[in-house]
Image (cartoon, rainbow, N blue to C red; front, side):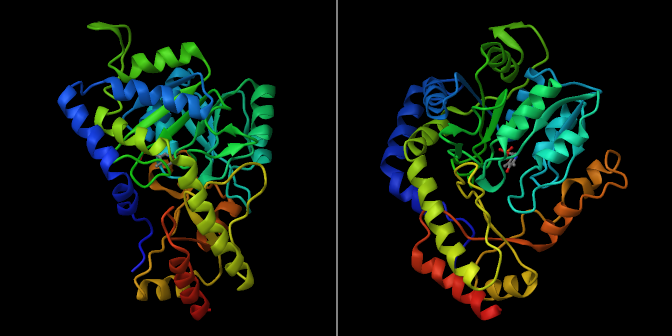
Length: 363
Ligand SMILES: *Cc1c(COP(=O)(O)O)cnc(C)c1O
C-alpha cells in the first residue's frame, strides 16, 4: 500500500522536538497569539524574505484577509485561474467581488499571462495567480500587467511554500501572499492554519487588526473583523518543520524527477518544469489519455492516485451566475487528462519504482 501522502514519517522524525514544544506551550498556557505564534511569524517572514507575516486560521482566511487589505470590494473584478482549489475563488466572493476566470498554460497548468491581459476591464482591481502544485506562476509577466493596469496581486501560495523564482520566494513578490498549513501542504501543521505575507507595513497592520475582531487595542474595534488567528499549538509544530522545509522540498523534487524520467520513457507527459522558478511539487501531476486504466491498475495495487482537479471552477455550480457559457478549452482539456501520483518527502525510491512498474504494466 502506498498512500498519496503519509504524514507519519515526518512526525516520527520530529516527535521529540514537537512533543517537547507542545508540552511547554501547554504549561505556558498562552494559547491565543502567544509566543510561538509571534516567533513563527518572524521566522517565516525571514525565510520568505517578506517584511511582514501575519498568522491566521487557514489558507482560505489568508486569501480573504489579503483581499480586504488590498481594498477589493463589491463591484470589483478579480482575475484568477479556474484550475485550482475552490478556496482561491471563494475568497473573491467573500469580499463581494466577481471572479473572472481565464485559461491556463497547457504545460505548467498555471494562469496564462496573455489571457490575463485580455480579460482586464475598467472594473478589474486584482489578479490572484496560484502557484499550482508548487510551481511558481509567471510572476514577471503578471507584474508587468498589474503595473500597466494599476492592479493588485495576491499570490495564492497554499501549495508553494519554499518555491522561488531566482531566490525570490513565492509570497514575497505580489502585494500579498496567502499560505495554507493544512496538514498535507508542503509546510503543514496538525489542523488548520494559514499565513499572509506582505512587504507593506500598512497592509500588515490592517490584516493583524482584521484577524483579531477588528481590534487594534483590546476592546477597541475599528472595523468589522474576524476570529482568524493561528493557533499557538500549531505554531509549535510549524516552527519545527520550517527549519527543515528546504530538505522536505528537495525530497519531493527527488521523487518527482525519478517519476518524470521513467514516465517520459513510457511516452506519458510528465509535469513540465518551465525554468521560471523552483518547483516544489506539492503534487506530482501528469497528463495522459489513458487515465482510467492507469488509475484502475494503481487502485488495484492499493497505490494512491487522484485527479486534481476534475471539475474546473468555471464549471462549478457555485459560480454558474458568473460563468454562464464560459468555455476555457485548455483548462477543460487538462482537467480531463490529468492525474496525480503519491508524493511526499519521505517516499523511498523503491516505492516510486513500484508505482512506475504498475503504470508500465497498465499501458
Ligand atoms: C489548500 C488550498 C487553499 C486553502 O487552504 P485552507 O488552509 O485549506 O483554507 C487555497 N488555495 C489553494 C490553491 C489550496 O491548495
